[in-house]
Length: 231
Image 1: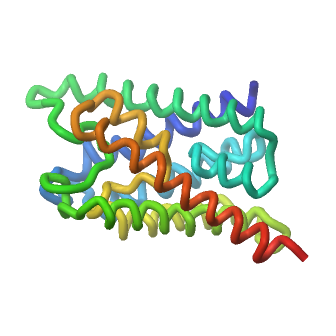
Image 2: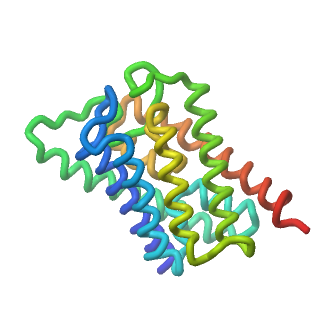
């Protein structure tokens, strides 16, 4: 249960820090403002760094169902643990989005518009207005790269002491490129939490932010397992 609780707290923190930076301090639907794209990217990346060093020794700090599925496919965890991780991550994301909502409703001009609470999305009216193909490709490819880095730095080839920093910096880099396209998911739980509260287009488009990261993670697991780990 310690592992599952750690994953819940870690995912809660990721959503609260990352999405909180976006909607409280950082970005509007028409483009970056406040702390801007760089600030939001740093918030997501550093949230992972902090949690990696806080709970990495307990659960491995997946805080992302796509990462858990990738690690499972790579043969580094059991199915029962993976199920527990994913459930815990989704609960943590929902709690994080819920706390963020409770904070935001205290602002006099707050309105739950489309893609509220830092929800991911694409198409007309969302940031850069990119189409479905662009959204799917960038989410799949970025998750592939993210999981490849995770598997590499936590392997016998990597530096375990620096793993948390490397993973967090990678997530920051991913956000710098991906925010204008989809707001950056690469994490189905991170997308689920805000979308449940926002509803509308955010919830209707949730399927892509579940499917594309999982596909990218599975591809990365196969590439790592058969291209690097296998003798």
